Amino acid sequence: MKPDDPPSDALFDVYHALRASRRRYVIHILLESSEEELMVRTLARQIAAIEEDIPPDHAAGEPYRNVYNALSQTHLSTLSDAKIVVYDPNRQTVAKGSNFQIAVLVSVLNRSIYQILQDDALPDVDDLKL
Image 1 (cartoon, rainbow, N blue to C red):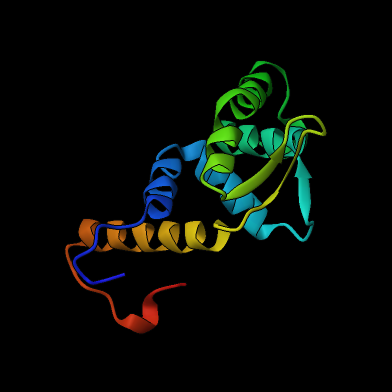
Image 2 (image 1 turned 30 degrees about the vertical axis):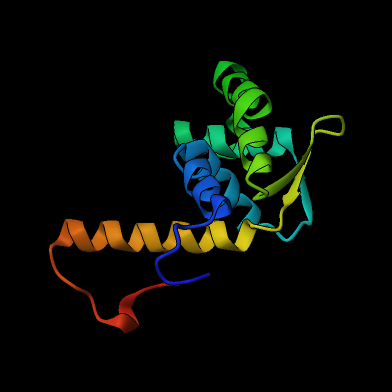
């Protein structure tokens, strides 16, 4: 790739996939998990807990169902298309895909840039958490 070449379609797909907060939550949860794959219901419960600001074992009812349906119908297939996750709709499992680390890096960089812009000051390189 030459310096003036446009970004690859894969990077565009990663950026597109990171637009929704629930997709970013999926990435964060998978990153923090010691398991190789997670059940969709586990992801839905954890995301509902984040959104409702409650413990995961209290995430149930309508908020949980809304997250579960959105993950199953939209978000996981978008992440899968971008190869960020491997989603098996039959088994209802999610694992890290080949572009997972790229998505983590892009997410961390975007968060750091946002914080810099909000603070209107450049931090020391040592203060950035990567």
